[in-house]
Image (cartoon, rainbow, N blue to C red):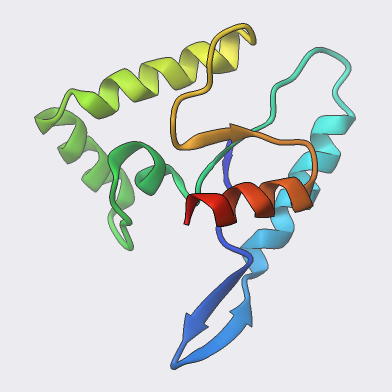
Amino acid sequence: MHDSDRPVYLKDGKEYANPAWAHSESIRGEMAKATSATRLLASLPNFEAAYLGEEVKSDKPYNILCCLKKESAPIAKLSQLLDALTDFTKAVPAGAVQWTSTDQLRNMLEEKA
């Protein structure tokens, strides 16, 4: 389970390659080495947006806790996520995707945008 992040970001009107995007391929490579069954899931584009419906720039753990204290919908989504991570027959919640290639992940991210 990881954040997909976005392949590029904008700063001062210019587009830059996002160095975090390269981690997706590294994660996929490590998962391919697994000796037991695994399920590779990504949050689109990140945990907060996928399960809380908002982008958070700072104090992420604190903001997540505050959101979970006041809203029950994210708790249900996170419960479904944990179920999907431990039981591969369970559906993946909205906001998460199972992927096998970075091209596929990029396409799913673009569809979500």
